[in-house]
Image (tube, rainbow, N blue to C red; front, top):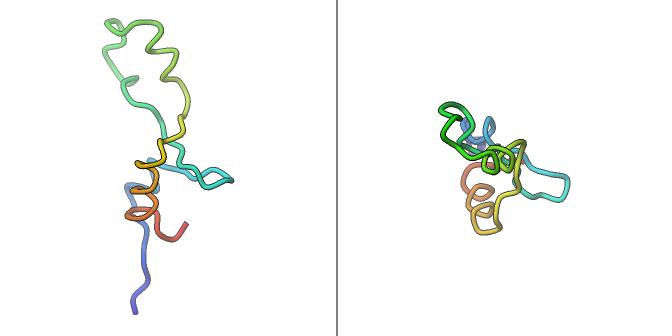
Length: 66
């Protein structure tokens, strides 16, 4: 049997917390920030925890070995 590998793109975009939740960087903060509201820019700072249904898909299909 060959080794089961993680998707390289997923390794760069997602991390697992100590309890197994999926953490990700929020989008919409790379350019054209003038037109976005200050509230949107503030809430999108840092990382966020992914919802359970989405996290289940990511863990099952992309982060198999973690």
